[in-house]
Image (cartoon, rainbow, N blue to C red; front, side, top):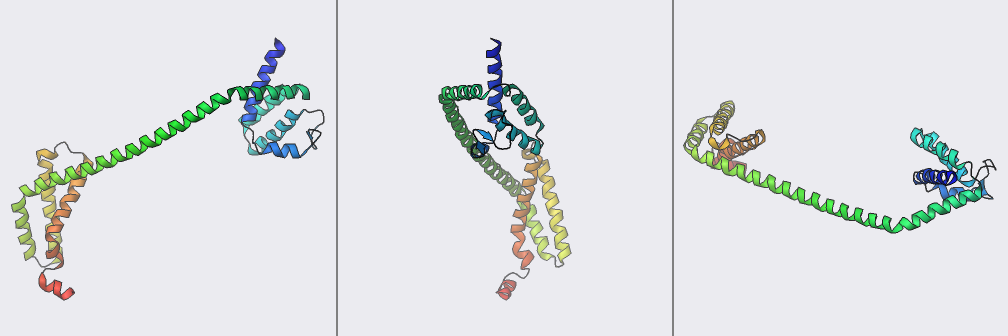
Length: 232
C-alpha cells in the first residue's frame, strides 16, 4: 500500500512537471542520448531524471524559483526508481491520458463554443453601445433644436447686431457672450435639469455649431456676394 501511494504521488508530480516542460526538448533529448542516456549525465540516472535535469537547468537559467522547487521535488521522488519502473510510470501516465482523451476533446469543444459565444456577445455589446451613442446624440440634437426655436427672436437680434460690427475682436466677444447666454438658458430649462455633465457638454457643442452655422457667411463674407465673387 505504501509503495502504491508512493507511485501515485510520483506519477502526480511527474505529470505536473511534464505539463510545464518545453516539448521542444523531447526530440533534442532523444537525439543527444546514447543507450537512452544523455552523454553528459550520470549513467546511474534514469531517463526521466536526465530529462528533469535539463528542465531544471533551464529553470535555473530563467530564475523560475517555483518551477525549480517543483522539478527538484519531482527528481527526488523519481530518482529512486530504476529505468523499468520509470517506463511503467510513463506508460501509466500515457494510459491515463488516453482514457481522458474524450474528456479533453469535450472540454476543447466547450471552450471553443464559449469563446465563440463570448465574441458574439462582445460584438452585440459594441452594437448596443453604438446604438446608445447615436440615440443620445439624436436626442441631444432634438432638445437643442427645441431650445433654439424658443430663442429664435434672440438669435435674430444677435445676427442683426453681429452684422453691424466691423472689428473682429468685437464679433468674437459678441459670439462668446451670446453662447454663454444660451448655455445659461439651457441650464435653466426644465428639459436639461437632470442632464449629465457629458450631455451638457454635447449640447453646448451642438449649440455652438448651430449658431456658427447661422453666422458663417456674415463672419467670413461680411460683404456677402461681393466677397464671394472676389474670392472666386
